[in-house]
Length: 530
Image (tube, rainbow, N blue to C red; front, side, top):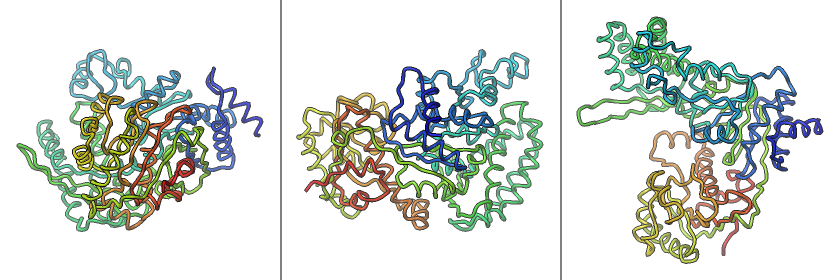
């Protein structure tokens, strides 16, 4: 079988590209997982392995091995990464949300203007709407496809035999966010007003059912079984209304939005009680200039409670990321039971990507002022050492970022990275500091020759969700922080000839440096400075 897989890799690899050792090894592992009837393969692939090529090639190989596999899809976290794929691999069949497609009449699908145009016969959605046409093409295509996680999770007809999840470390967050039932008083009031305008009298039954349901919620932490029992009357009313709205949804934008809102609630409530697990109840009171309203959210604590949103839509799932950490923790969080996994070696030399650790500062809330002062002195020494080189300083908050900048004698060289616009403006020109630099940015070559992680980026235990989840599964709390460390580490050194040093001085790093929270390719690069 090994020889056959090698032949298939060469056959399907993009023309002009030679498969790397790490790509060969990973593809072999994925194929073997499929042959051995595993539902999931989890691959921890360091930066530089070229996981996008693996994502493109593996569906073609699996379809050739089993011709009953018809459709495949690559899922990305962001539309930006989706665009990177389609720019590099133009044959991919791509779909995004409807707001990304503007029709010849200058509007997007299901807006009020759109319904006006359709109802006055200015357009035929199946013939003229670029979104509908592309969506149908994407649904039915047997070619390699791509979309973002959000679209795949939320679109009812999105299904695939093979599902490749790129940047899979973000999957649990996507699932939890989508599985959160949000009841926004302001949205309800808007629907109530529009219902009267449109002569739809049955909306009041939804409002009464929601109020009855909310009044039964008397605890911050709610068992899924209790939620299920308390939500059945509401679910019954919603299902009655959805049947009515199915007939009305193509009349105008109001009915379409109301249909989607009710349908979204049905899908989330239907999962209550399906899988054991608790939910967090959160109440937010919003005060605006001319209005005050409440937002109630009911949030699953673990992604596995709502994992059916994605795992019911495919047959074989391939999870790929450089930032998984402890694979068993990832699998448990997402409810993955039968899987094979593989940790790939980094193709980058260790001497080019060193992590220099010197446990000097005990950084915690009680010691924060003293720790910031100590950190600032060390930051200044690092800047002096790398005086002609650009660098990044990762902090756990904007407060710490501003404190270090203001106290540093190199204040004028440092810019707080408050947003992407600031980052792009000063990238390669100033030393950037802030809590959001760890993800989604590329600082290859001279853009960053050094980085400092000032403090282990633990999530705040002041957040009820974080505190509750940590009490139930402490490993999650550590893995969440470790993933941010891994992401920070990966901002520089983007190819095998690139070079940068990653400095850590927080004593809290000691619990991570030899643990499975960090992948092997990160642990092997740690050097203890005495």
